[in-house]
Amino acid sequence: MIIDIIGAGSLGLLYGSKLHAAGYQVRYWTRTSEQASDMKKRGLQITEPSEAEALRISGRDIQAYCIKKLGETWAHSPGDWLLLMVKQTAMDELIRDIGTIEQEPLNIVCFQNGIGHVSKIQKATPTATIYNAITTEGAKRLGNEVIRAGKGQTWIGQSADASPRSVVQIGKNELISLVQTIQQAGFDCTVSNQIDKLIYRKLIINAVINPLTAIWRVPNGQLLQNKERTMVMRQLYDEATRVYKANGITMDVDLWEQLLSVCQATASNTSSMLADVLEGRRTEIDSINGQVVNLAHQCGLTAPLHETLLHLIKGMHPEGVN
Image (cartoon, rainbow, N blue to C red; front, side, top):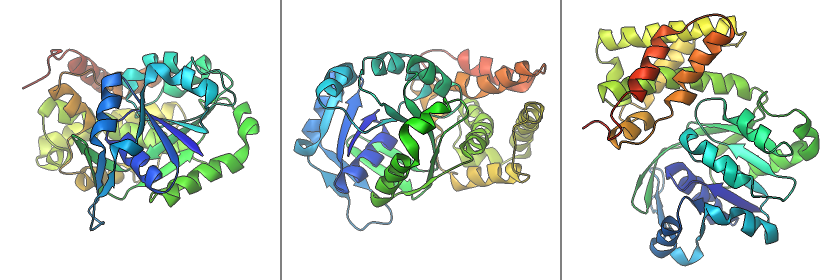
């Protein structure tokens, strides 16, 4: 099995390295040739709190290429699965790169936060089979070292945004085979028949936690340290749940408690949105809070708090916040 991973961030390298160590052929696709060359020169190290020794992979054993060579490579050596591990902010460019692949069938798994991207990918690649992955895995990259925060869970399933006919094209056996492969690499991974419920659960959690940490410049756990912050969190949560109910989106009755638990479990984490703001990068605010606003408009409602956060984050100086 050949597994292609687009995106050499912390999660992409974590999954890729563990799959490589389990005996599978992994190819990394990076934004630039320089990034690919650096990986092959320096190698990778995966450090896990539950393992006595770090996993080290020599640069000689790493297959890394610039994303612009994706179509050319697949023409003579097609992969079995394409795992998309870039952020939503890179999605439009990524769709153009995927469009250079002429091999069919094309099996894609999306690991992005937020919503809206699957339908865009499906429209651009109508014959592709597209799945969503939701994961609670966490990792931090320091140079060529990836530090795993602890073992999380991963669910893979097909969203309603993907074309239903693709289920017939690929069948369930191939998906089960992929999940078993990821399990063999050391991940708690399962097939989910309720992936949309998990997607919208993660969306509301991200829509509450991420922008507030980016504005107040605090790790996740500090959102719970005073009542003013918790009050704003609850107002954002209540506004989003009204939008969900109007759209017929199902939620767990204890979703607020789950949100607080995520905050506590990731207390020391710097959210991806805060990291993007501090580094002056474009954030995923459009695909998170922006999508809550879009859902509200679709059913004749407004989401003023989420819309305010949307504009506050987008209005930050492009050089970031120091």
